Image 1 (cartoon, helix red, strand yellow):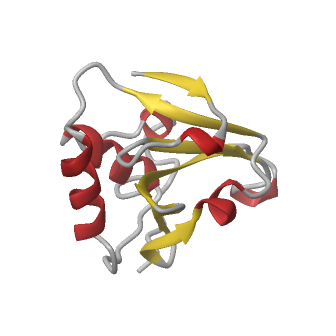
Image 2: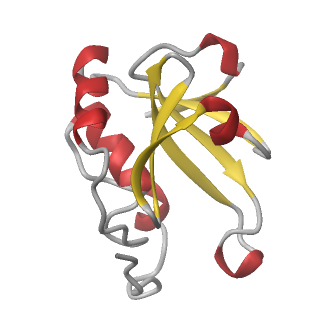
Length: 130
């Protein structure tokens, strides 16, 4: 997996997009928010309210940096988009177990992984938002 800083005008359906934002956890920690671009200026994202669709303008607003996450063997774009859409309306966000990065990585690869979570110490995040 690698990241490319992007121009948001050049997105393709199925792209795993991410933004670096500040002020997340307790207003002091920078974090990276992830989503799947599904075309027509729309991104499927997973946040504390659940999985939903936002415009790319909303998703990228206030971003310090913007990325496309690249994989060696991703699923084809149509599968990625179909998978992302199939989760719309789902709830159960959990920062440590079911977050935006887990969701986007799963849509692209079938693997439920989060680099951000894997770099935290065990037990650092326990609160679940439902």
